[in-house]
View 1: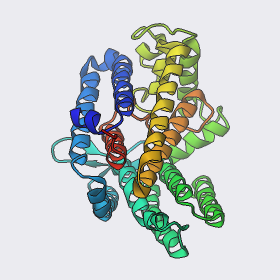
View 2 (view 1 turned 90 degrees about the vertical axis):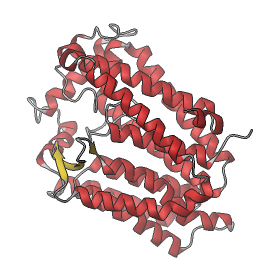
View 3 (view 1 turned 180 degrees about the vertical axis):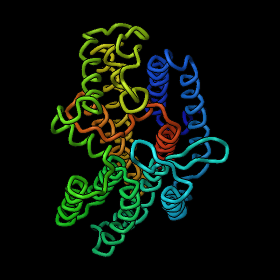
Length: 363
């Protein structure tokens, strides 16, 4: 933590830390009736491990990080392949987890976001350093670098994570100065992937139900439709100031499944109210803005890394908060720093370390 504060933007690091600690309070409130303080403590342990991992990554300067980008990328691809094999485990219709011998589980798609944030800038930074737009070869290589992890994540299947990977890739490509016909082609590919999710057996029945319920809330009134209705009711009942931490009726009754992960924002809505939810969203806005500031003072490679991280966080926050409010489909994406889950917490703090490494604070 000390290294993050010394080398990086203090406002950026402190904002991420505040979000993580707020997440611990919300996760603890959502799970205390069933698990006591166990999940609260685990969330703090995940935070501590994430800080240690970020500190370790900071030992690499941006030049070393750029040189090691292919290694990080290949390791992430290997992990995505492993998850589809016998070591992978299925949760909610998606084979997204690898069970480790020590009793822990890892979600490789989260770590793939970190790897793509350095691998794609590695491919595109050279053109920017020469003062020109990416060539056709650059774009085709970038397409392959993006396409492999996206296809492996879709094979799990995990549409939400695949869309985040595509979104951060678009952000990096736009920042690199790629010409608009290539961007239009990528948009068509993304649209085709979403269409395929609805019209082919790519997604499991459980995941398809989550998407169709968004279009027709009455389609699954006893399953995901009931769940999303309870989430909206919890947020709506919070009013301006909320019922108080630990005092939300729906949250404390345990009537919202996966509230500590997918729907942690509903805890804030019910117990902290509109103002509490607005403060959380403002903190995310500050976080993304500070990453944008880091991009402005970084070199070409560092700027693309920062744009990738900012796009990843921004898209994932909009999707998660949107699905809590009922204006976006339920995709199972966690809320960065707030949602319970080791893989998400580790990936988010590694991303902060990438930003700090790419654009260190001027002494």
